[in-house]
Amino acid sequence: MRKILVVGMILFLSSACLPHQGSFSEKTYSHPSFTKEGSSLFTKFELERFFSQELSASQKERAPLVSVPFTESHIVWSLELPISDDSNDDFSLEVVPKDRSKQPQEFDIPIVINAKVEQFIQYFQTTARKAFSSWLARSEKYIPIMRNLLKETGLPEDLVYLALIESGFNPYAYSRSKASGPWQFIYPTGKRYGLKTDWWIDERRDPEKSTIAAAKYLKDLFDMFDCWYLAAAGYNAGEGKIAKAMKRYRTEDFWELTKYRYLKRETKDYVPQMIAAALIAKDPETYGFVGIEYQEPLSYDKVKVPEVTDLRLIAQACVVTIEEIKALNPELSRWCTPPNFPDYEIKIPFGKKNLFLKNFELLYPGEKSPFRTHVVKKGETLSKIARLYRIDLEPILEINRLNRKSRLSTGMNLLIPLPKGQQIKPTSMAMETSGRMDQNSKPIETTYTVKKGNS
Image (cartoon, rainbow, N blue to C red; front, top):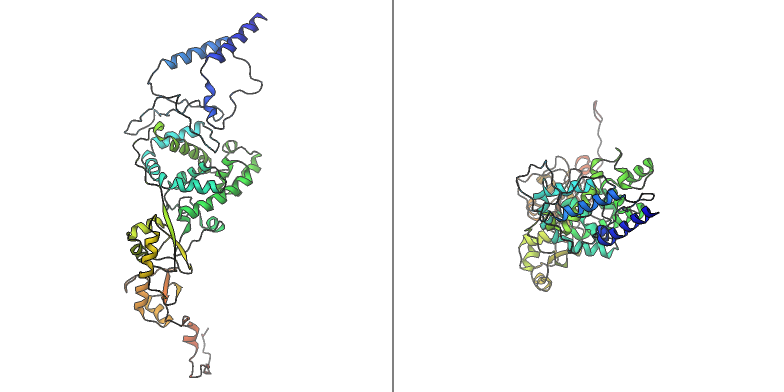
């Protein structure tokens, strides 16, 4: 009985005197509990060893903080810089001493730090340091507007870091799987969530429209899996793949699914990358990313313009360069706003709306000649297309910004200017080869004798 009382007193004194080791869990992180059901009390030897470790750690002031490898079920009590002995980089990491007085960063998505997450933290600090620095510099341009859009749809704002690992916030990012834009939508998924993609426009590259689409997709994924880790994995691999993995291995735990071979390595690494990127992006200096020159937050006004409005005209009305207009509208693939988009809403520099409206009214030519689009087929030439529509070649070259030596590619879209008041249809190839028309527009009957070999 005396021994039990002594152990009880030691435990009571240790809990009252020791620094609070569970402070990491107060940072709104989602971690497994430190104690498990059925675990035994500390022995006196374990307590003495624990005290000696704390004492020796407190004596090592300004010493480099090195993380210790651990399994996925372990807990990390502080966010030190993990440094690898195998690193071959020719730079030294700046180690920031641990500061317990610093306010913890808060997250609205679950954050679990395990060996895999630390591996990617180290990867971003070393091998991918240059790329990650550029991503951080670009992040401040897009994060504010993306956060607001995620918040408006009722989603966690920290899901914005999916775009960080997807594209580094690059609107023009394009993957080997033909995914495009900051949220890396492939064509079918983008179309499902309302993103238009054709010869003239690719709304997957629009930071605003693609974020709204990503928010809808992520919400659907969360409603399906009720877990942000599984939702993120589904965003990478597709919801069907994750659903099949859960059914096959009878688990709803993402970390458990990563133990099996069914999911690709890319999907297994996706969530740890997201967590690592979020940790660094929210507190870059702690991880050695200092001196980042962040870009200014994106800001713009919107104005409606007629279809096929020349971007040079828009820039002239705003008194800015055409490069500024293109930078604000990465979804536009050509020199003009898309056809068949009346009252297209285009972005212009913030504060230029009144100036634009005043100048555009003076510069815009008003009523334009009608036009239609022509999709180039294999073997077609500019001259042949001009003959097909019975118009001169020069107007086609001018409106499409081409010259007589320009090469056409199959699937290319051309604007065909038509005479005012007329809607000319392309000449039928069947009409050209099968017969002629008389003055009364009635077919002339002809007799043809079939010869051997005819088809």
